[in-house]
Length: 328
Ligand SMILES: C[S@@+](CC[C@H](N)C(=O)[O-])C[C@H]1O[C@@H](n2cnc3c(N)ncnc32)[C@H](O)[C@@H]1O
Image (cartoon, rainbow, N blue to C red; front, top):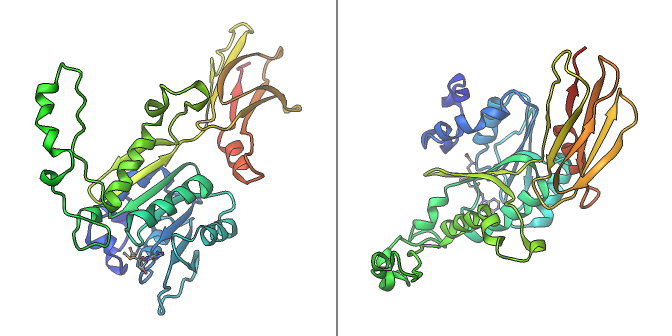
């Protein structure tokens, strides 16, 4: 695990004392060794920014805080900005400046207040996190604390639905719908809202077709201290790929899914020739003929139509380029 290769005593962050790296280590493996852009909201003394700088030797690290630490010198590969996590304009200004193509990883370790965390999450997730990117929300358990501004001790006995809870067992097999008691204070309430987004396909399945949609989340991982949300990414595949030697000429079926509500455009170019548009749509499959001669390469490009003229188009394009080839 990456953290075992670092001298953890040299970083002034409670991520070490709370053993949060035990949780982060397996989840961060896909980003190791890459030139990623990482944003952490909540700098405090700056120790975690230095930790991430060393954890990801090729990464650019960006920190945001309402109050910047006086003694902290950002130095190589670290930039810091002063502002509130609930100021959407400020967040976009920072993101457009340092990560115009979006962040790969965003960590919220700031106020731990539900409403603020929610505002930050949806603004950054929708507008400034790359497809396939990771969003980590630390210390969501503050929602269970009486002494936290918006938290409250879990007490299922005083839950508004506890009086009907006893019906539950009798209700099995009968068409009586009884909700479970639900604690939804502060961060806990916000995390439970994320569960609804993860279930968007089920939530919308009984609605008119045009209102149905998949979740914006690929998956959500809830650990005792940190919640991780991975943003859905476009997919592209081809079958058969590659064609085996001697196999006769035929067709390859290319399938794609934008993973969100955007319309995708599938381009195919043969032999490095000009790309031609072969299909559009949120998802689909299309059969494309193989080219006639041997040792040819077919490259397909898959792009999501830009909702605005944002850099997101470029990252879809790059991440979803596949090369399909036919052996001689
Ligand atoms: C838990 S500390 C961050 C610790 C740091 N990430 C580390 O691991 O060493 C929380 C930080 O969030 C900042 N903060 C609190 N409310 C904020 C807000 N609304 N916007 C931005 N930062 C905030 C505080 O100033 C504080 O420095």
